[in-house]
Length: 229
Image (cartoon, rainbow, N blue to C red; front, side, top):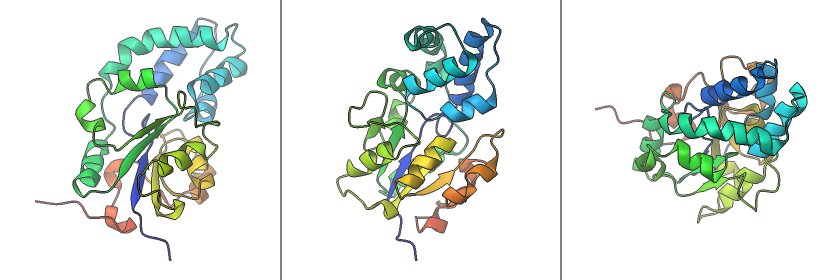
């Protein structure tokens, strides 16, 4: 019998915030200048990774005549404009506020940088204040290896004051690399993959696969049910 869930960790991009769509738009804008196309096959490999690692995958796969620093400078220019306008993914706000209301400890684990997190959360500060802490792996010196390595989730769990065992932590992820990382950390995972993603690749590494956070039923994991008034 599985241990009851006591703590929850959320990814951000493409799970809580609709930023993956913007990442795709920005990346395609950059690579199209070199006659290249940013495919789902490439995107699925770099989702969830540290910013520098994700950029290197794009550069190497598409043979772009850019350094990582040059690529990021181009990307950051567009991100500065688009990211502050980003909205929530369906079901994200309701679910997070529900856990907070019921005193379930929640935290963030993202491959983003702190600067990009600040841009994305600029107009959602009240929402993100509900999380006890955030591990932003691009800028966190403790996170030696990005997803799919388990480092980010292990470190995030240790920063809860209760330091829960992995079996009591539930991870919400949208990226295959994130599912791999949660599985490697010994944690249960709810996977909310993108439409283009082949679900057969990681269904055996997660506890549940959903089309949307709107479909999550808390009591299936021993968590308080939604209040229907």
